[in-house]
Image: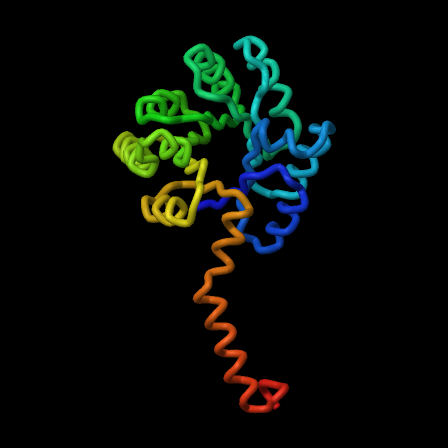
Length: 219
């Protein structure tokens, strides 16, 4: 399983990259809007900071403009993946870009059928949004499980990114399903590394060690 960081904040990326846990980064227009107006510099910095794939989303709307912008985005760095939202009119564009060996991440996937259609096109990544499905009372994890079943049944090469991860349960279940990639916000990673039982255990070990009155372990 690969772990992507869902952020455009360079300070947060810089914090997590040294752990060697981060395999890539996913960005979107909402995340980039928080990082100031010099978007190109932000994206170039992120591509340099991360060895793995960095997803960058198109903001154009007309299919011909989406195609042109996707080509421009793909030239920013070798590890760029162009993110395109699922819409019928974009399918020919996506198919053309795939044939031109441009890595595509189709985002805003909410159904098994949507995922199947873009998997048939051979895109690099497919991003079902788990949390947003939960928001409208559709079990997001069930949809993810079905999408993984389709991928495995038909041996599609597209990698599935569990996106819109809102809590630890989402992440845990996505891992157990064998999802190719989980992309999570830094705030969720912080929660994982501050489990109350872990902190209690550390405090107990420290307390017991102090009772010995020793400063060094091996002396």
